[in-house]
Image (cartoon, rainbow, N blue to C red; front, top):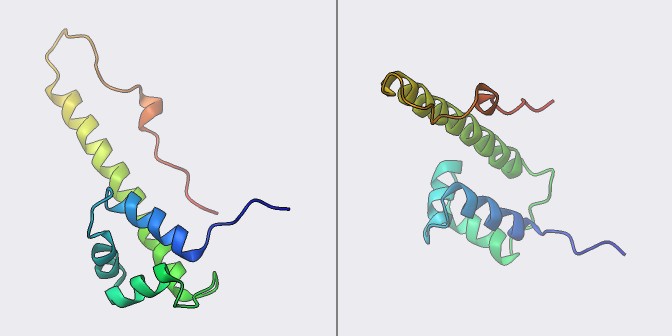
Length: 108
């Protein structure tokens, strides 16, 4: 028997907490980012909305998470670049190696 699988509610909660750093109002923030009503998020979390993996809602959720990854990588790279430009001459490097700067691989 397979371990209990995540429900849509479990997935939504996990993604919401990850994207909004565990903020108490993450459902409202996620609804706004997805262009949907907070009631839609609430319905999925409570199991009242019967959205399956083929529903466009999850395509939009995936696109949002992928944009956040790209935005986060750009922000990290901006911090690294700024630190490199402003690091005192002759000081010991405190920045990640170039290998750590690599962006995540795009999805196939």
